[in-house]
Length: 329
Image (cartoon, rainbow, N blue to C red):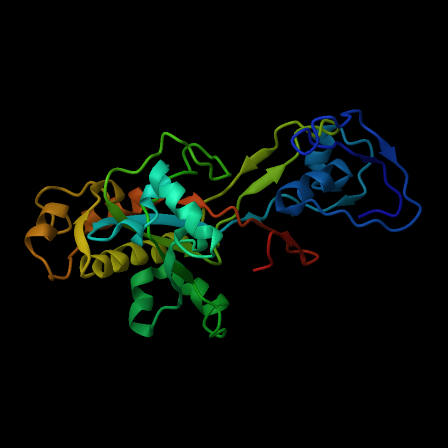
């Protein structure tokens, strides 16, 4: 924010292919408030001379308006873990798998139904959704790191959920892992689900303690890639609820009347002699799964590898209470 600011405007070619890409300078006579979302706002502030003075000096910012170290340093995003996945006994339109496979006859039939406001294209195929807070007996299962977070951020707020839990009626493909650091969840035509009908359990961590960062890498080039770290699972408190959800979902899915088999790729590779292995579970239907310490570590490693961003970013400046994002959490 500035009472008099030089603003460089750059219209995206994706919006208007004929747009001029020549930078323009705009002089403001009155107060101007600029917002570019959780991703763009920290970069805009830094290029405008507002941020950590040490970083701004390295960038060569000519005038430092305000030394505000928290700019770009408190990026947060929902954590999403996809899985487990099960194959089910279901009818053709009970799941979205044929749409995912781009089945031409299915798409043609559903398109006709959609004209009358009916059929599969009138739904998002997310058939279950709930918000979850732990009971007293469940709280100890989430680990000591989360317990301290619970006491300070959740215990006195009974309407504040720890997790959102949902079932997608299709085979959901993994994207946006920590290892590749991609932010936007994109669909790859090669990611076609296998034959059959599926249900996918999805867990969203509503208020992660983990933080990342985003900083400008150029004082003038708005197209220069940002120095961006999503920060998934950078705080130890966030893994406990996701581990709990994985184990809870597995017990629920195994007991559904439509259950046929587990999709092994949506689970850690448990040892063959483990009571958590898919083979053992298959041979002991209805038995509550016991996880050894080794199994627990495998689950944590698996979740750490597969957890993804929700693309629901939240940037919070804790000094001035500045909140910018797709939504305020």
